[in-house]
Length: 201
Ligand code: GTP
Ligand code: MG
Image (cartoon, rainbow, N blue to C red; front, side, top):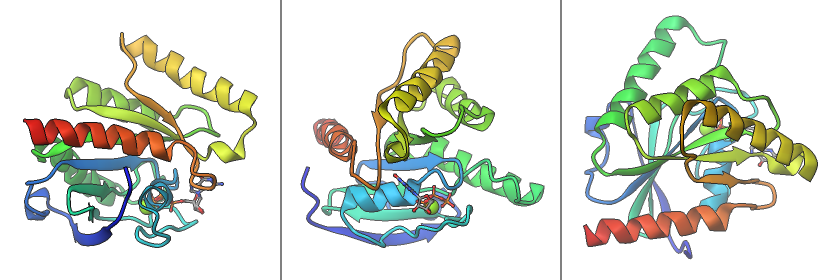
C-alpha cells in the first residue's frame, strides 16, 4: 500500500468522542518506550507525525490519524510504566479497555513487544486479555535492528513458546525496526487486506 496522505486528527480520553467510526481502524499498543510512535511514523512515512520520546510515557491519549482518507490509525499510550501513580494507571486502564472493547470499527490491534528484552508479565497479561475478550490482534516485535539474527530468533521464539502455553494458535507475528523499515511493508499489506474486508462487509 502506498501512503499518499497521513494526517493527525484528534486526541481523546473517551472512545465516544473519537472520530465517527465510519472507516476501518487499527490501533497500536504496547509497553511504554516499546517504539509505538516510531513505528507509526515509519509506516506512514512521516518523521514527526506521532510524538517520539526517549522518556517513557510520552503518549497519554487516544490519538487518531487518518490515512489515505480511507482508514484510521490509532496511537495508544504505553502500559507497564512503573513510575506512574496507581490512580493514573487505573484511569488509563479504564480509558484503553473501554476503547478496545467498544470501538466498533476496530479491525485489529497491533500489540508491540520489544524484541530485546525477555517477555514481560504485562505483555503476556495484555495478550491474554485480548484473547479472553476475543479481540483480534497481531504481535509486532520492535527494535530488531538492535539484535543479531541469532538473538532475534531466540527471543522471538521464546515469546511464541510462552504464548503457546496459553493458546492453541498463534496470532499473526511481525518483526520490525523503525530504523531500517523491516516489517513495515508486511504490516501495510495486512492492513490493506483488512480494509478490503471492510469494504465488502
Ligand atoms: P510511549 O509513547 O512513551 O509509550 O513510547 P513509544 O512506545 O511510543 O516509543 P517511542 O516510539 O517514543 O520510542 C521510544 C524510544 O525508542 C525512542 O528513543 C526511539 O528512538 C527508540 N526506538 C523506537 N523504535 C526503534 C527501533 O526500531 N530501533 C531503534 N534502534 N530504536 C527505536
Ligand atoms: Mg508513543
